[in-house]
Image (cartoon, rainbow, N blue to C red; front, side, top):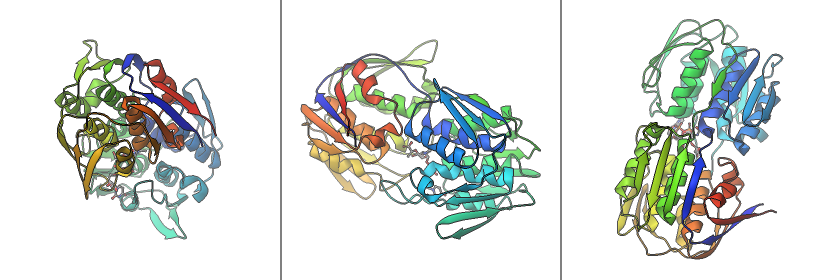
Length: 420
Ligand code: EPZ
């Protein structure tokens, strides 16, 4: 397994173009199953999760090609409906194929995704929402077995709590259901909004996109998708946190500053200078002092994103003062805490609340990557820490960040990948 060797501390300086959003491209890939023909998705990041989802789609009979960040998914001869355990268990988002398969083929057999690095990841909202559209779903031997041979029928469902994945899954299914569906307390993350817009471009009838209430009129057919993926707000936020930690000045290009508003607000509270370009599309981040302590609570969009929790906790580790961080989406998403403590961070956990007593410096050490965002936070910590940090099991990072070591390296970080 690959590892990163990082020598710190180094500031981060220069320009960076942010890639397409992993969490936007995965539902778009699943949505291609609603159509017959060639869907073209552009600005697709070259990530393990993308290549992995291609394997899932090919297992269902689609043909995928991926060159120069353009992904073509041809479903002309696609007829499979079985997403097996040995594939689904590796990536939870595979459950996104459930709604489209039921809607387009009337049946599906998808393995339950199981948990992830930090704990259980339920799918009850996906199942209940699809049942509200008339799907017959049973759980047998770890598989979700679904059937609706007479097609889906429009229905009404309220997500509690709001769920990105369940909103995407049920929305995709509702586009081909007969009649009207009313979906309430939907997620409004930018990635869900993009999915809704892409579906409308492909012939779906959806009102309320971008709001928590979606009204869908089922249609006969969804055309192949053609969509360029929005910039990855979490990748952008990760690099912004890197500047807050290590100091320096970085200009992020290709971003949508509005999608980063909750992250920008927290970093500005920590004393980081964030400047949004007049023409939009780029954000400049500068920090040349010790960050200030802060209080953060993770919330569904437009609140502070849980996917930035580990990165901001790492900035808090070096802040002047005591910070408080509460995780409300995944109360056990703290696998990074023990690793940060190995680097000298002083963090106390009490359930879903973390108290971080800022220290002057972090000391390099060997650490273990666990989940995707925690691993990125450890890499940032290594860039700011004194001496050498080795981050093991970096395949977690490759799932959601394209060649992160090359891009950090171009910004001045001393980081190299050791293969094997
Ligand atoms: C998506 O996961 C993202 N993944 C996650 O990003 C992100 O952390 C999460 O949304 C929250 O923003 C993708 O988009 C591929 P949820 P998802 O359903 O859809 C509970 C990353 O690092 N819930 O919005 O699985 C759930 O336990 C990943 O890129 C149910 O109770 O998240 C959580 O508490 C990690 N029942 C809350 O809802 C369900 O059926 C929100 O989860 C589904 C979810």
